[in-house]
Length: 168
Image: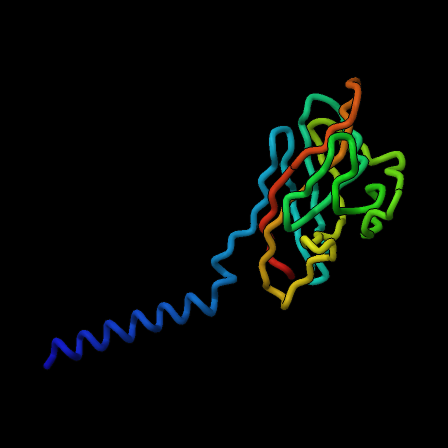
């Protein structure tokens, strides 16, 4: 009879642990930002409107001028020397989608060995800003940049970071 009691207690403990982990799953999600070669992430946060506030750092071997910066929940299909598929117009802190036929303007300089803060919407595959269902929801996405390196010809469009963030 006591073995049944012990078995019931063990089952109750396991069920309580499963319930607790499933309801507090957002606390298990680790926020991170992993930069690709030559790039690193500084402090970042993502608000419930899908606006990513991030400091992008670079050490590519020269100062860079970023003409386009984009955050998307899907890997953007970008052509070389084109603006990323989603992101901020002209790399300003105006958190708007690239306008059709838009011009990248003069860009934003990020000096080698340093960083610069950017605000940008993170877009979904439907090209709409990714919004949280509720505060504490999770977002996994990719940061793309269209940039040139001082002293080198041409522009580069590449994935510069992978972001895992919790909406605040």
